[in-house]
Image 1 (cartoon, rainbow, N blue to C red):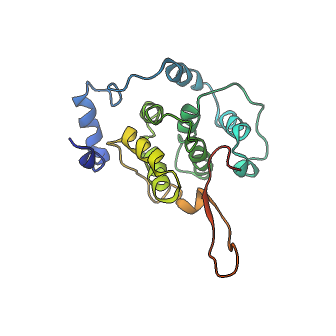
Image 2: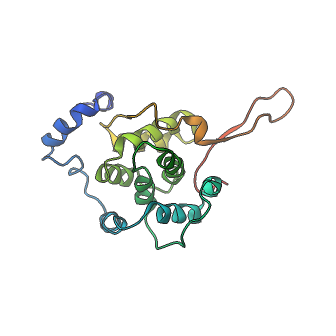
Length: 192
């Protein structure tokens, strides 16, 4: 299957593709030991603990959404932190966490293959793909997002009625000067 057709595979066919790779949708990608260890450790973390770490890392743009967060518990790779924040039911709190996750996953120091492996591990590859495709269209770093999309293929974005649109993942000014329109900047760690 070519890369061009790999991104067109529906979520219904993902399990069939996984069976063709030994039943594991990410077995072809050997994960770094630090990702495996972090994925095992994070199973005991609560969403507020994850959010506290994200805010401490630089997600201050979204910090006002959470009145009280616990002290930072420890450390996780951004790929794991971001993908864990994508988990949850389709509700308001998950929507808010997904916006924060997008900011964490947008850090240009992240490894695309780490995002791909971790998103599969936590079964959030569709949500991660949604963010990556928005990043490809709205961010000024398309090469980064192409690598992330390649690492997430063949997963397709799902839940279009629930997941945030690009306006929820950028900082936008109304006017930049006479005769000029709004200025839009993709939110990522370290850019505040």
